[in-house]
Length: 293
Image 1: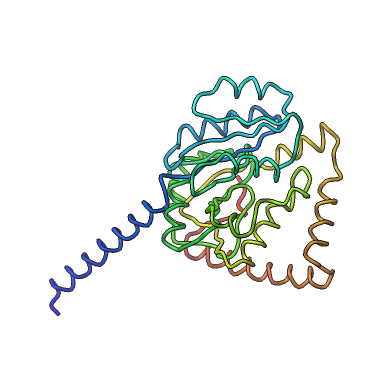
Image 2: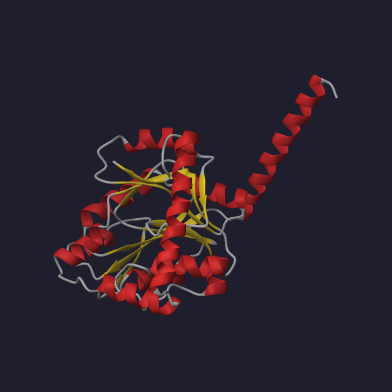
């Protein structure tokens, strides 16, 4: 085959590949339902929703679950357009709020998001594209965490350009994760025995993986996380400090995690994390998870 013929064949393969990806994206549905549980910390909720308005591509609907806020959150949310608000009289916890939102969501992809987050251009589209390209059922974006003292939008653009071919397979992150509805149809909803927050996401990811679903974190999408502001508020202001140890004990009991099994699991996770870090540094110069800013 001559050089011109090989070139034409290459162009044809690329075009065919793009059409196939576009077809799979179309079959994934118009976008994702975004579910955000909130409990006070209105300042972060405003910032999160503002970033969603600025970067709304791929979002089919936004559902906010107000878990008994007392700081003006309910009044603020009642005046918003384009946001569906579900309200609980008390803080029912993260798992119950996620389940509440899941019941109301209409899209085949359901995206669960913390309120102490800002998103960036193409964040949903990047996760959808990765999911259909790699037939992945639970997807998280790359996350940088900290005070946010940098140009987040500019950094995100450069980050995705360099890291879009990187992924951590077999894991997801509870700060932000998108799930295809078929996962819930097979393994059920979030376990509401976990109180307030902690371990309900780990439990769900474990059940999904054991059921044969594929999980991944992708560099095609980037968000910034300010860092557990709701749980810090509950601990420091409301004085509830016992739920984390209770949830940890319940998780270990539920999965029969002896001290030996936990030790071996940590060793395996640390080894896998080291390989990810080395690979990501070499390929793109950033980390998908773990960088501070």
